[in-house]
Length: 453
Ligand SMILES: Cc1cc2nc3c(=O)[nH]c(=O)nc-3n(C[C@H](O)[C@H](O)[C@H](O)COP(=O)(O)OP(=O)(O)OC[C@H]3O[C@@H](n4cnc5c(N)ncnc54)[C@H](O)[C@@H]3O)c2cc1C
Image (cartoon, rainbow, N blue to C red; front, side, top):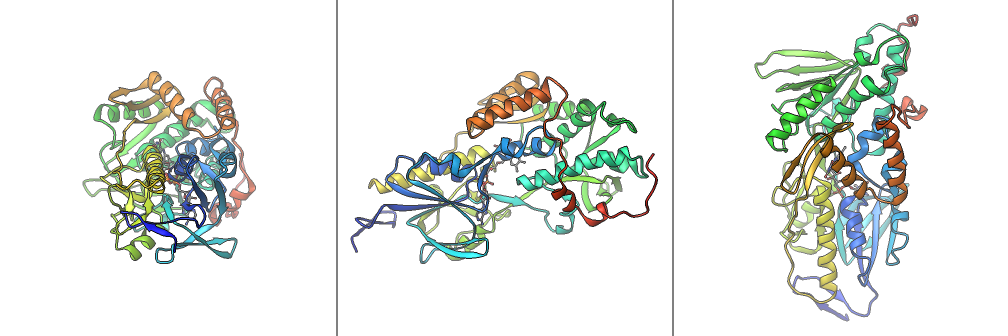
């Protein structure tokens, strides 16, 4: 074989065609890795079960009718169409064979194998309900476009049900959000703003500003990973919007009609709420376990793969694990970590192809973090500077626009934000039949028909 062995153990074949890099996932990690390889003498294949790159940080705006799915997701093919060394394949990766160096792909029931010389696994994380999968049909997570569209349907349908003046109107007008991290804080703030400001004049039979939004967490603070002054400010901003912040309460049950709770003193309680949002945890993609089983790598509590300092799998220097699937130095599951680790993996592959020997460790540069609570209110830090209120919100706006992929999306988002922020409108408050049908049966089946008032 016309090949030479790299000091890292990677076989680089000469004269047998370009080095084949397969990237699993077109999220932040995968897409940034693919782009970072645009000038490299390699052949890049990006595989994803969806046809798009999704900007997850704005999913909550899709769920509350501010933005459409096209605003926050760009077809991966469009994004990479100018990159001549890249191709895109649609399919679910069902297995990775580290021995034969092949990916097993399932596309609409058709199985195929894709060989690689270097592999970047960036399949992220998914919603988790630790020990309580039975909560899932009642408390929607927010991880995919479909999740957000289902949630949008439930929020706007709940308001329609309240307009009918049926019994249990209060339960239709109560929105329980479980988990007070950035996603929970942002969705709670948006629902409160939607009810109290945007839809104020849209209903005749009830006052939308009567809607209750309850944000629940077992911990004793909102935004636990943020500095303390920002936690306090975020809680104040939420309460100013009318969000009830219930901390130190453990959710012990979720069903069609509400949420059961247990306080720190063991006291139990219940919130009657037809709409529940689950923002209380994620677990790593199952591909992590497949990699661990074959390589002997260890997984952390969330199922993330413990990688070497250069993001490679122990004993498999040709396999990189990046983004939310990677466990390295307690780095958080953030878009910035995914983008930087994806780009790092790409750089390592390019260096090896060029014949450079030593692997470089991944060094994360923390640019800061933000959470937008509502119009003109955000908290976060940029570098070492903490920002809140209107300045924080303006910085949040610029940062998010910068990272939105594709000019078309940016323009559409600016128009929608103008509509929502300067006026009272939401451009996308549509309930679709597809998602109405996807609701738990008891929400759609007529029970005891009552007369609408
Ligand atoms: C609601 C929400 C709000 C967030 N807000 C912020 C924020 O404000 N700031 C921030 O920094 N981070 C935020 N994050 C976190 C951030 O989005 C993630 O850290 C980031 O997306 C991780 O990137 P990734 O590439 O590892 O995974 P992802 O972006 O999740 O991409 C994984 C990709 O892999 C694909 N995939 C998974 N399994 C398979 C398979 N078996 N076969 C084929 N394809 C597969 C998926 O379809 C997906 O496209 C938020 C996340 C959510 C859900």
